[in-house]
Amino acid sequence: MIYPVLVIYKIRLQDSIAYKTLLQPNGIDDFLIYDNSPASFEQDLSQVPHGACYQRDYSNSGLPKAYNLGANIAVQKGYDHILLLDQDSKFSSETWNCYLCHLDFPGIVSPMFKTKEGLNFSPVYIGGMLPRAERELHGGEYSLYRHAVINSGCCIPVKLFEQVGGYDPRVRLDFADFQFQLHVRDIQPRLLVLDVVAEQDFSNDVVDVLALRRRFTLYLESALHFRSDSFKGKLKHHYAVFHHTLSLFYRTRHLSFLADYLKFLLGGKRNDGEQECV
Image 1 (cartoon, rainbow, N blue to C red):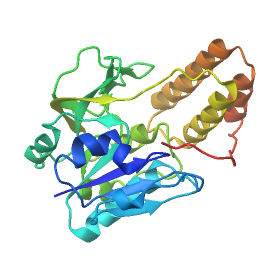
Image 2: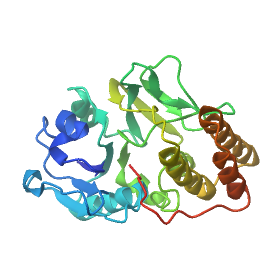
Image 3: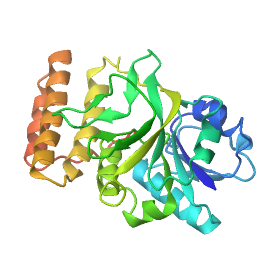
Image 4: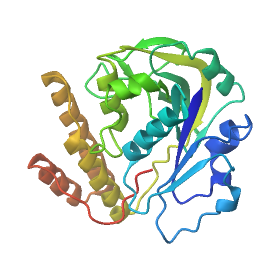
């Protein structure tokens, strides 16, 4: 009924928290492992379950390619839902049964998320100028016009996924969830947040300027291809990008981030180096 799609990067399957807390305990061995690790990383394929599909992408093409491939495989295998998983998502023991109990919901289903530090992380309120995590998490139905959820943990009807054309391959990392859900809400404007809490590793303690700038380049690339459905949405998107740019500038005092932002305003910049899309 549910076909999981697990995206991993520079990690062995058996070390993925999502695999250890959700798939393995529930005996799930029919799923897609999309490995974005570079060729230099040696994967232990002996640990891959016999029924799983393993796909290696040395070019690290991004999240949409993994999700869209997973949806295609789900259709071929006759599944009616796909489940998107990040390697670092930690799920409670009752989560899988919660998914199974809500397969009749016509839209996206997701658990609540907190960070390892206990901060609220998802769902996200998108009604203001900047997206922010809900101050008080609770399960129930939400409007996709006012809220969004992170990619990981999203259980999506395959027919709905196909109706919106899947994930936009140009929005490869940041904003991929917002872009997809922006299309979904035209067809199914309600999402269901399960009354279970998952944990997401969201570290923001990188101090190396070169590493931050490489990551910022990927951020801007996705931001460049994001398409809003309203003038107000475009303003909010540009404001969010500018806010993030200033945050990095004040954090590092390096003008390179402002220079990269100006290139983004003038039409963007491509990154041909190694790209970390997980």
